[in-house]
Length: 298
Image (cartoon, rainbow, N blue to C red; front, side):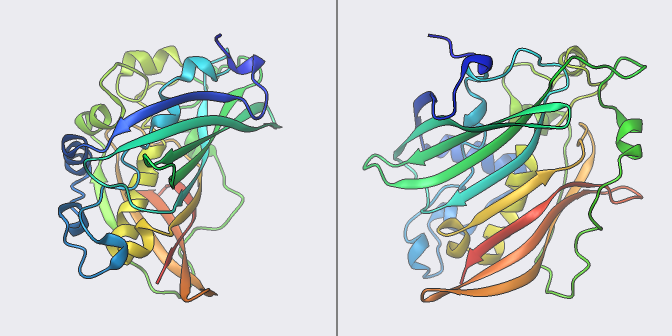
């Protein structure tokens, strides 16, 4: 039965899969970002949460999109990823398999868009929950086009004004940032191998965009990288992220992932450190692409 988005009800399971935490998958992910955390090779520096080698927590970042034919709405023109949440409970271990389950957990209307919320649980072979991702995907309620035929372009992005001030204005300590150029090869590695509007200009134009639209989850992987580099096991086992995707990142642009401490709160025997995190373009305006919070246990 094909549960196309229009027919789905909250609570419907969209798909289940089994995925290998294989060394070649880990290496491909690590090479895409230059993310070579010591814990991936088993060097956990004595952190109990990182005993033995682990995998990047967002290794299967795009599992939510593996069966879009089962939950996307019919109007695909101009659809955008608007918000992403991640909950990290325990590390992924190389040489094991993970079970994934995708469920529609919410749907709502916001201005001229319909939002579907797809939650993916990643569990180990014993059933232990390792990671949970929650994706908010927006679809235009009715087909709309700008005068030049594009629903979003660089000019419309420049005219967009956010309701909040620029992030990073507090006096908290800043963690080590990370910068990357999202060139065509990176787009393909992250959103391939099939051609789609995240790695191919022709496909992007079919969906109402003039250029490659970099997949929103890439920003969350960059933020996960700087959080893992800073907090180690406190991120891999206990990390949380809740971010809004506020501007389009176009293929070929360079971005920088950043984070600043905003609060600390006791959580049992640990302290949860919460940071304001964001990804900005390395341009004159330092255009913010993604912004929100992330936290880890120390």
